[in-house]
Length: 310
Ligand code: HSE
Image 1 (cartoon, rainbow, N blue to C red):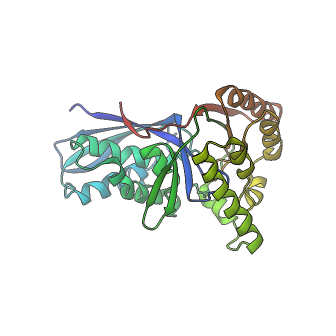
Image 2: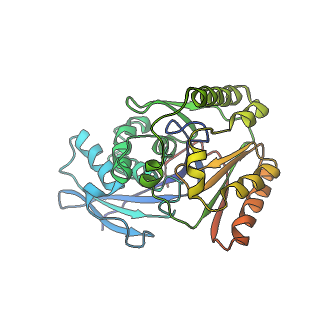
Image 3: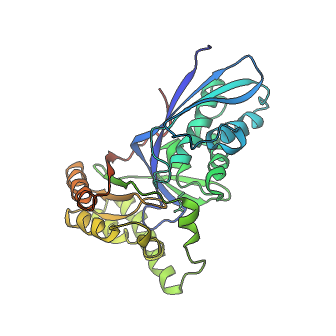
């Protein structure tokens, strides 16, 4: 067997309360590991998947990592190259942590590294987005972009992939709790109304503008006032058992804000420092523990690196 390249692509929190489909940030962990190696037989193949409980298709066209990698190889005119991928899922599906996006980001990153890095990381984004689209049918980069390039990312336009890194005040930590109930992104998108009122639009644009101003000015109080989703969270909260109690526990522990991570069921909070983030995590966890809902807790700074070669 030929030697391979191994990459790590991190989990992400999409939406960040007020930026539905246009904001996301990366966590330090969990994440997926993807190995790419050359093979003598032409074409791209997925040879191994672990950690997916048989749920991931090996068919390239139906696999987020495989499809993203294929589109990259086609773009580079290298589709006849013999390339094998191994996908090691180290994070849950349907969790709201950008599992499919991490695989897509990892897939393009691994193949690009294997080929000697013909493209810059940012140039890999369109192919990773096409991969993620295989999973939920929608074309949005709010998980893929931070998983690939790291940081807190604003996607001004998903159509043109006009993607910008936002500053994050020193010390800010994320808390994410994943209750073990499955919500498929497709289903969580289907519950959403296609219309918003003018009042909601004004409130939400005020909040997203406030969040951006707060991030640029390191104004934690402004960030806290702005992390208030008046459009998506009220429609999705009922899909997540004990959401309001968990949010109240987090706010009581002193977080800046708390909302649904991506399409859920994970719930995230942002805090001024790691101490508050840890304490909030324990308080959030207690709610699910008492309700006998098994869960995983992650506390992490914002990962500024994104996908990396290991
Ligand atoms: N922005 C997306 C959503 C993220 O909330 O549906 C999940 O892929």
